[in-house]
Image (tube, rainbow, N blue to C red; front, side):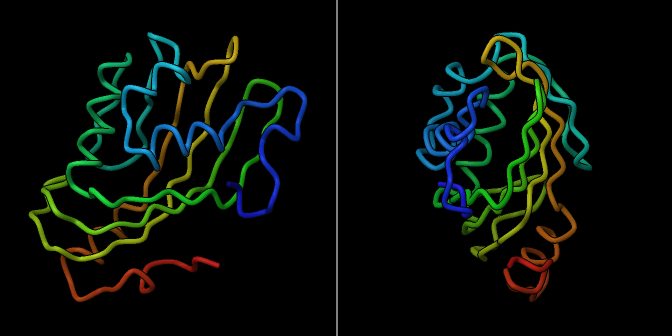
Length: 155
């Protein structure tokens, strides 16, 4: 659910971003990506260390890597803006590291970081996504004595 109390269904021509977040990310279900992404969707990564890729198998692999590293990861939608075929979202990710992630060995620490993403939606499916995750904040929290509240302003 969007923190503002509304859902994306409140807009006539909206993409169901809240449903996408719940069914894929908060349910830890990479197979559900096919409901929301075109088969040849492109990920244009802007996150340091994350390689861009294309297709559902690539997306499922990235999602599964996140779930393996943070089995309790939870996504909270902070903001959504949609205009025509573009949707922008600011999401908070929070979870405990239980597996290697982005070259960071297991620490058992909690993290809380932002993800900023822009999506292009054609025919009701995501065809392109540009994502920027706060990797500096993630590394700070996992590799040092940083805490989830030490990186960024979350409210």
